[in-house]
Length: 443
Image (cartoon, helix red, strand yellow):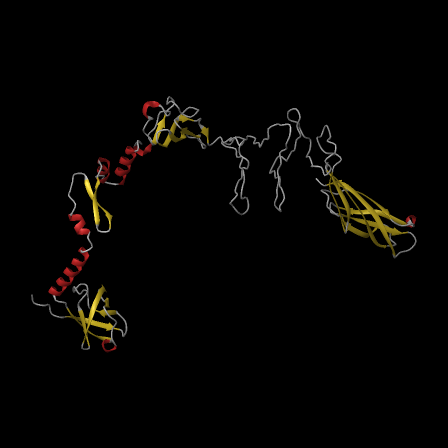
């Protein structure tokens, strides 16, 4: 076969030490230039390894310095016989891995197909009738429908009634529809979608979803253990018996704020109460304990917070209850408040204070200043050691043996502090201390 003439079109640019080359106006792919063809450049033939575009490609070896530069493109095609010989050699090497011999050694049989069992080894696998139906599907939807039928489901996994009309005798895995008359249905009326998953015939789990339009449909689960079905347990009306559980933890592996919480949430717009109850007993107590560094916050966004000791039924509370510092404090029979309990005491630069459980707060201290001659002028002021909720009742008294010389009165009073007014009947410029006491409320 006569060789093809050299291809001459455009220019080629070669870079010293690089395998990449580019051309201009060459249309390499259109011209059928491929691996093995050679570029003639300044007396040297450079073998092409790959043509990557109409005007780009790579060489088998890096371009030598003598061929570098831009010049007219001349490509000599590899002889067709040389290409064929190289292809045959490559094909022979590829067929020498044992795969062809392993395939040829198999004897074809009906409903069997070859599979690899190892490197260079093959065997025949069974092609079941069900697998054949899947392979003959025209699209994904048809394949899914056939799989659903194979699992005992209906179209879209919803339309197959429970075989035999009894969930108790069901032993085939799948998704089924249970009606009101279906034996073994969860408590309550309506239609249920039931998932049955089991093994060995005597062990299974059934999960039932109520088909309804309400926002929170009922969900039940039960277990088949050694051939005996247990009772249906609700997953939406969750009232677990933790009698045998020593520790019940929420959010143990979580982090950040609000890492664990119990949400007692009303549904369907109904304003229902919610309770956490410890049943009655002769001993023991109900404790809320924080072992961290933060506090315990009881927060109400409306309606207040009420702690009610009970003996016979619910007991109304006329006001908040403050837990006593003194555990022996008397509980008032009518108000249910610890009336003589001291809740908090303290002292700072502004004076002393005490807070009682019924809301009473008393602060006292002394102020010192230079008394002016004019009567009724403010001569001293102070902040209370702790603020009241509103302006308290106050009383002042001069702390001096010359009390009759001075006129002392109360000036402006607020929830946070007071002013003291005084006048000197004899002269002026005398420094004097005045004792004060304030009585009000801290809640």
